[in-house]
Every structure is written in structure tokens, then in C-alpha cells.
Image 1 (cartoon, rainbow over the protein chains, first blue to last red):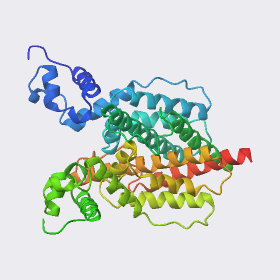
Image 2 (image 1 turned 90 degrees about the horizontal axis):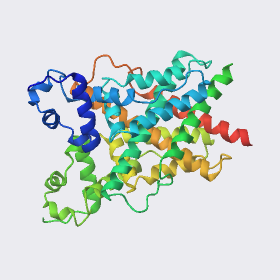
Image 3 (image 1 turned 180 degrees about the vertical axis):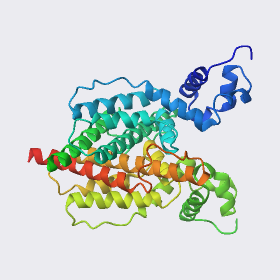
Image 4 (image 1 turned 45 degrees about the vertical axis):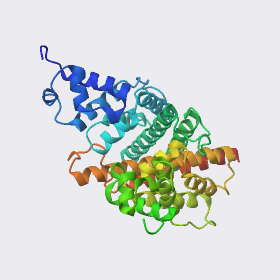
Length: 194
Length: 194
């Protein structure tokens, strides 16, 4: 290759390919072709595909819009949850990439930390705040994973015309209701002790 | 083939293959070989792989242990959630099979109906109960999906030794805390109006 690509270029190109072709078709071979290098040259930047996906997951989450820090904690949790949902929705298969990165322990901790910090002004213990951040993150990722599976099925015309659970075409009502229940449950728990 | 297989045999064998080899390796070709028939014979029972997976998802959920109906609704929600989690955990890739079936609208509605019925004695509206059932189902499936991704990564030795989010090795604490928050949030919402 005539110019050396930076790791940033590699991750940016991987994100473009993900968005265009989906996770199943994001291969090291295809990424190398898009960068006009040999596949072996990629390993100078990332040891394997899972590490590449972890960098892509971090990039997706970095693009989540910032949220004001001086909101009351329930508002801040709702705002952070919405920002993370939108970030995952912004890229095809975003939830699956982030979910597998979390499962492998390779990254995506920025999202968890944002959710943890969102409850900093509550009266909860650190343990409760950590558990709540994990619950919120699992709900957000799980919710968007289903939204993206549905979009994909719809795009292929593969979905059944009469979906028993399809009472929420844009996914927004179930999402807001879920975040509200978790926030209210957390408030009840903290309030009961105060 | 000398004996005709029933649809039940086909689904039972598919479930065995899923548990043994995982979703990625559950192909119509492999299923046909396990049943000692031509792949074309399978299409007499199921029109395509997604329909097969929907039947497998229903079978997984049918095996969820029954829960007493005369519990108070919060206890019943906790018991149903635990029974569904255990049912998904009982088969390799169970959460992914159920998740994609739900996304495609092809089945798995039994789980949603159980969660809906669990709140029958609460003072919530049907709309609130339907939304809460969807929230619970997304949390349960999303949670087990991550548990199973982690087990798979651990089995392959692919997980990072230092997982930022791995404060819950058996997954049980985050799960219970999440169901409790959702139940408490639902109770706060219903109670505020009563």
C-alpha cells in the first residue's frame, strides 16, 4: 500500500461497512479490500475481528449525544437512555455489535459509566447504582436489538403480517415505559430507605 | 424414508441439534441428516428455517415451569420471569431463537401472555399491563441473550480476563434487581393512581 492507514481510518471504514452491509458481511477480507490493503496489513492495527468490533462499538457509543449533567437524576437517566438508544439505532446492527462487545468484556464500558453517573445525585448506594446501570444497559441494548431485528425482517419482507407483539411500530412507547418503570422502581427503593 | 416423521419429531430433533451445536450450525441440511431424510422432505412439515425456529422457540417456552396463579401479582411476575429465564437458559442459544422469533412475529407469544396474565389482579389498565409485559419480556430475553453470549465466549476462552461489566458471574443479581425495579415501578405507577 502506498499510504499507511491509521487505526482511526480502519475503524471508520469498518463502521461504514457495518452500516452498509450489516454485521454478517463485515469481514476482515472485505475491510481490507475497502482500504485497498492486504488482509494481513489489518492485523497491524487489530489482533482479530472481535477486537475490531469492540473498537467499532466504542465509536458508535462515542457518538451518543451528550446530556446535561445538572438535570435531576431521573431526568438524566431518561436522557442518557434515550441518547444511547439513538446511538445504537444510528448504525445497522449497532445493538448486536455493542451487545457482543459487552459479553466479551472488550469494551462499551463508556455506556455503562454514563448510566452509572446519571444516578450520582440519588441517595442510592454505589452497589445499587451499579446494578441499576447494568439493568438499564441490558434493557436498552435488548430493546434496540429487537427493533433492529424487526427493521431487518421488514426490509426483507420476512415478517409475519400479524405480529402478536407489534403494538408499538416505532418502538418508542415500550422503550419509554420501560425506562420509566426502572426509574420509578429505583426511586421507590431509594425513597423507602431515606 | 421408511417411517414418516411427525412434525413433533422434526421439532424435537431440531431442539436437540440446537442444544448440541448452537444456532449457527442448525441447518435444514443437518436436520434432514439427523432424521435420515432428504432435505426436501422437511418442507412437508415447515415452509422454511424461520418457521422451524418459531416452532423450536415455542417448544422452549412450553417447557417453562408452571407458576401458581393465586400469588399476589408482584410475586407472580417475579416467578413467571424466573421461570422464563430458566427456560431460555436451558437450551444453547435459547434467547437468540426466541428473540428472532418475536422480532419476526412468528411465535413466542405464550411468554408474553404469561407475563400479561401475571398482572391481572393489579389495578393497572390493560394498556399498562401490555406495555409492562413487553418491557419484562425484552428485559428477560435481552438479559439471557447476554448471559448466553458470555457462556459461549467463556467456553471458547475468548472473553477478556478483566470484564468491566462482569460483576455478576452467574447473572442472577442483575436479573433479580431488574425484575424488582420493574415490579416496583409498576406498583408505584398503579398505586399513585389508586
